[in-house]
Image 1 (cartoon, one colour):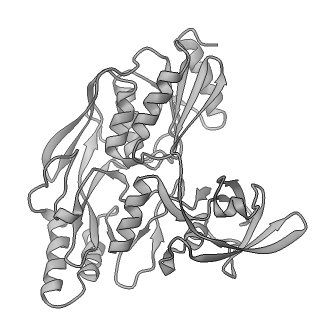
Image 2 (cartoon, rainbow, N blue to C red; image 1 turned 180 degrees about the vertical axis):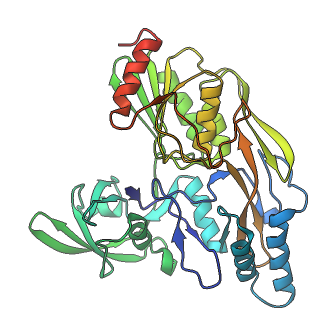
Image 3 (cartoon, rainbow, N blue to C red; image 1 turned 90 degrees about the vertical axis):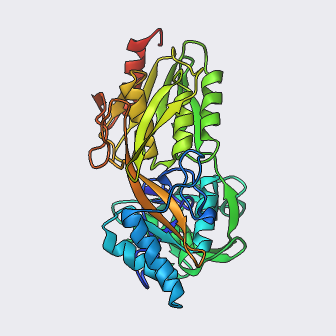
Length: 392
């Protein structure tokens, strides 16, 4: 299991509950995975840039009413909302303080507060640095990939889940901001030392592109942050004519649904991407026209492919645009939208579920790949591409 000190958003589930982290794969906030655009400041919930929805109903309404009643009684709306969420049975619901929601929104912009490390835990519980972002506080201090992270602010991290380590690096429990200090205990070979870093507001590219060969381009999407669709379209346009494309969605925990639809538009010439419901109101998402419909395409998925990434995968599979290779996806097909509470906190609540163009539900089921592959999935994708077109 690996993780980065980015897209690591806290969730609250009850009074006095410790901040927790949701997805270990890419550490995207629960609310981010499958959320549609909304304006919590308006108190409403919007889908695809439309007008605010009517007053919330069902479980959403219960949470909002609990917060409003608490405010009227001079009590904490956020604590009341947390209690209502804990009773709701909504496994994806989250309640954020105003500051936490600001951090969440920053993550959707591809920004995060941290030191610029990626790390993973091994079977012995040791935490190894796997990547250091150039220009980050960690990079400036000379931290390297392969270094072992032993402690954060004096607390041993051995045996901790990597999500907890990431939370310590970001200072989630203390509300740390850019400029705050964090002390790392590090080890490289026989050398052990302590390094004090200052957290910074950093940015990351959610899309990376590399060539396996002159005829195969791999486009990896780590999360659907703002601008990802444009980045994918640019990468597709720059790929050699007739070349095969591997769209790597492994470990992608989701993000903005609008960006997943924009990414689908890079490979489709319009048409249906998904349907979804908001409190029973049926809606549809459509691709824009003009996408590349001829380049051979393989989508790589695994158990860490979730929500908006599953929406995209289902569209490409159902529309016959891509061969899906890998293992069954996670199975999160629910939609969350935000509601601003009286004290400025925000409740992200499940309001519906989406379906693929063929009408298949994803929630609790996931998407079954056309070809199963675990180890060597990328090599299998290359083999598939060779049979889809003039690709060597």
